[in-house]
Length: 323
Image (cartoon, rainbow, N blue to C red; front, side, top):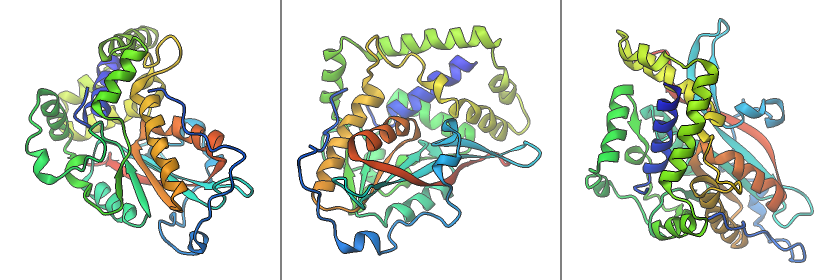
């Protein structure tokens, strides 16, 4: 069952963008002058984190981007995703610039996406994921045309968990939204360049999942939830446990050289766009991607952009106390 859940989660992340690159991120040359940012960059209140935001250094690495919120008696309360703020350090090219990594799950509570819409409206630019031709915007009428088998699988899972679909509730037509992802052609070319394919990647994940299942003795949580009287709640609780197991979900994704297109290749493309936006003088940006992309993005921000994490804000994506 752990394998079954892990593969479903891959399909969620992958096919949410209507599609079935590890090029190096554009590293700012050390010899270039710092980008001049507006004086408002450090003084206005746009996209400020919550007062209760945490210091990332005080959070375990496995909880930096997605976690289970529990009550004092260890009962599950919510599946949470993170907004991690990175700030350009003094003396670096992007001194004072703010980049928030806004993690998201592709199905969630309606109020979760309403909250995200409000927060995302406060940034100079929001770079979003969608494997589609450059510059693609998601219009409501486009969703009516998404009737493929895999889209139906996602919709079925959404209905079973009593959750909503990200693409239907996030305002991708907002003026500050900017497409920052591979095109289908770029995605296919990167796979071909590395001699990889989606099916090879799924096979690697399947092997890793089977090994994990054998080592752990399996997990009957999803099966038991299917036959529970409060199925939606129990299914959410079982699936949430799988979602936060990033190591399991990502196991086998890399090829023999430690590369993959699904996360690292797409992140490289997103950060090429991020570099362009920062060089254009944007001072408060959000990178709005699936939470599984954030560990690699955080590493890029620290190593290639001279930024450091300052605060983490947690949002409830799934209420695990209700159907």
